[in-house]
Amino acid sequence: MTAWLDERRQQAAESNEVLSVPSLSDEHWRFTSLRGIDFATYAATVDAVPGEPQGAILAEGEHAGRIVMRDGGVVLDEFSPEVAAQGVVFGSLKRLAEEHSDLVEPVLGTIVGYDEKFAAENGALWTDGLLLHVPAGVKVALPFHAAYEIATAGAAQQWRVIISLGEGAEATLVEEHLKGEPGYANGVAELVVAESAHLTYVVVQDRNNASLHFAAHRAEVAKDATLEWAACSTGSKTGKTRMETRLTGEGSTGRLSAVYVVDGKRHLDLDTTQEHDAPNAVSDLAFKGVLLDDARSVWRGVIRVAEGAHGTDAYQENRNLLLSPKARADSIPGLEIDTNDVRCTHGATAGPVDPMLRFYLMSRGIPAVEAERMIVEGFLEDALERIPDERIRTALTTAVMRRIPIF
Image 1 (cartoon, helix red, strand yellow):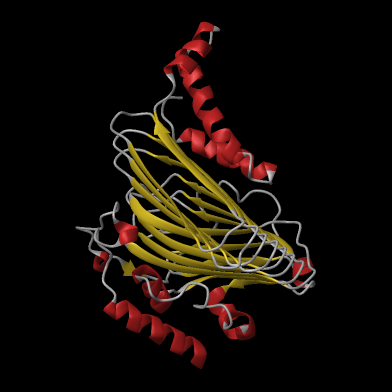
Image 2: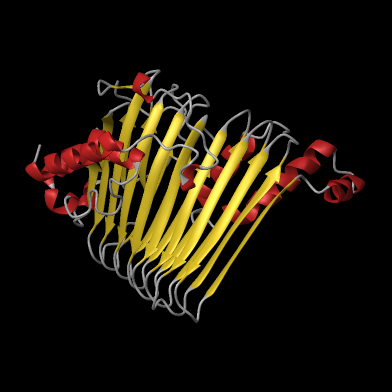
């Protein structure tokens, strides 16, 4: 292990030692209780069996590179020689932290720090993950694909991702968290999008319904750069995902979209920030969810506008469709604005299917079940349409609709 990496792990371990598991008294955890969860019962393992991922919906077709992390180790690490010839670096983070420390050291632990319990734990204990670096001016047409799977019941998977795009670079990374066995997943993703670069980042979370899933994703987007970030969540019993976008350069854009389905007694917590630190930047967030049974969702979203970030254009919305009277969705939008000449708006709704809309469709001869399907799919459609890649968009639509038992 290199000295700098050992120092980072030690720093994270010290923070992890003093930080306690969040409770309901913590502002960001007011609606998500971790009481009764014994994280010590989940054991890390790196002796994973090689092989293709099970249940990946976006693994078909050509890719510029592929990673499969099973339990604590990378078991598949493929990379196109043609793409590598352009100076792109992709593969196991554990391996590349040694081979390309010049790319890893400036980013690791600098975008997502160690001041939060789960991030600190990950900083100390991560076993592998991936690095994607695209140098300036290189545009990779084919997507990169990463799959994370817990194959051993009760295993803890600590994964880490670094994505770095140089000036004017373009790339797409699709990240899937597969059903697998029940376990505990905790990850961190650090994204750096340089001037005029364009990153499409798609995250699909379909963990086992008995699993715990925690993740902190944070991006820094420079001048005239664009981040298109799409998330789909249909799995895990309990967990919390942070999606934070910091627009550091003038004219930068962050476009965030998410769809989720929560059923049974599962609990989903999404925590987002749109940070405007530069003038004339745009952020646009649209999250839509469908809740069934006794499920619960929480979305807490904050738009922060720093002093001097004039010309900011920021929007956030969270819409929830409740298909059960026992389901509950909490939406907490917020604005923190320290400058003038800005446009910042937000909206949130939660409610059942409109009976008049259902009646209208049935009066046109559409059966009740098909009418429900059309309403739900139509509700999610505009969020899914924001995903630029048609193949990804179609696969996610199919996967989401399968989770809704009325069909």
